[in-house]
Image (cartoon, rainbow, N blue to C red; front, side):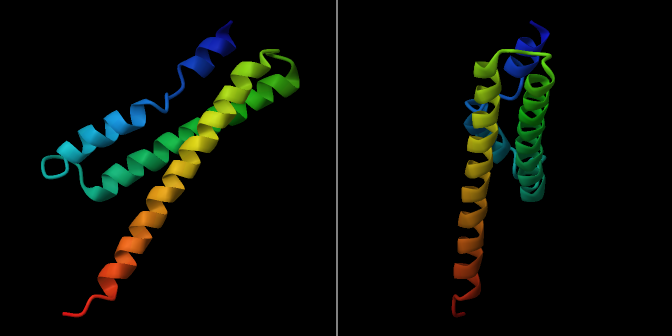
Length: 102
């Protein structure tokens, strides 16, 4: 039962847009762009770590709930892919800016 609670208490993906919106509202106030990206990477890293721990628990027999393990793995995968798309868009925007003529 504890493993279900730890997996369920992991960072839900539906919270990412809300956090992004809150962070964007704070850009001029508290957080820099770097801090926003750092927070996003940290959250994705936490999801990856939770997924790894879930897999480890499944392999060692501490849990037999494969559904929760698969959900944790898919959440981590989706968050990682979303982060990579954000990265790709940022790189693309940077390249467009560097090719602008002044």
